[in-house]
Length: 275
Image (tube, rainbow, N blue to C red; front, side):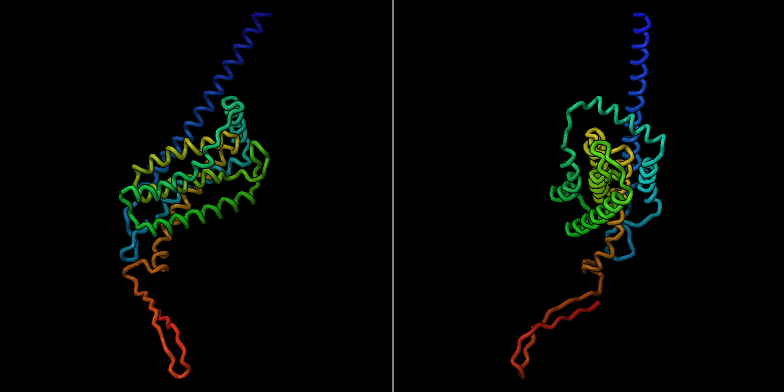
């Protein structure tokens, strides 16, 4: 009987070890996939656009492949039985690893990429756009990201793994962080982008899983939305430059002239605009 009990115990430990290695391997593949796809499948753009003196990033259909693939994989994982079983196994393994110890620095680290996006310029890194253009691009990217994330959250209503609140899919923290990381890549190049994606993946995406705040498919979809939002914002930059009159070649001219009416003895201002 003791021999049988010992054999069963060893078999269980061996099975647990195999399962744990499988989960860790899956996580490694996901992390490598996110970083590798973002760096390699989306090579750094040459600055080209149809508007003279415009530093916008050229639209390419191929740029949609990585973010749409990530989002599609995440969406499939909401109800797919096989992926759901993997999600639960991963959650169980992380629960054993975590115990009662949770870390919440991902709540703040999600904003580090966008802070770095502006900070690199101030520290002297070579940027492709002026500060005001970066500000407009970042604002556009985060507005797009927020609309997509919240719209999908309250449409899909996937329960969170920890609390059961029905707003798990996609991960807003991950989308926020990956938006900033992709902004850095597009503005400063792949060198800075690799560092940004590394910190974002390990410090935000993984920690959302570790803290039992999201499922694996949530962070994969959130990454896709973040990457897409940043690219759309840069594609819109030529139109924003024309809208705000930042394009030096634009024929838009605005002038204010003081006026005085001698008959009614009134002062005023005359606005003159040429488009």
